[in-house]
Image (tube, rainbow, N blue to C red; front, side, top):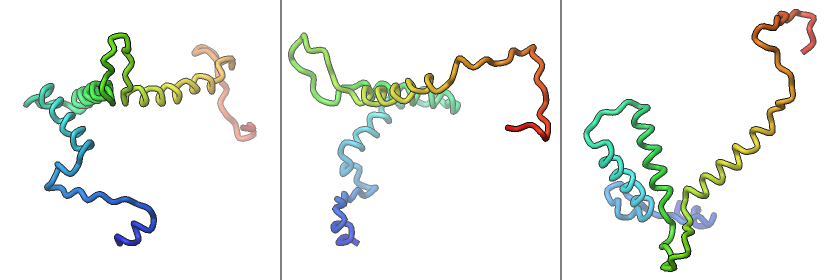
Length: 123
């Protein structure tokens, strides 16, 4: 199997479950989420909605961290975060959705009478 994987150009990293130190950055991310959840939630029992809200807030906090060390220049306030890439992707997806709906189409009001469909109606 190793030769077949290597012939396809796939690089395999063995990560046994009993050795989380092999996980490098992704394991550090898991530990960060865990530490934030322990600080915020503690021993409280949360409903699904409450837990989901806390998890989204933790995700937001972690995604707002800088991906690289900040510059020592006090006038350089820019920082690249993973959240910026995520939100730019999300905003480009949402921005076109308003243009797909034709807002010029007249819609009947709630009080207008609507005729029922009949077998002879063409759809």
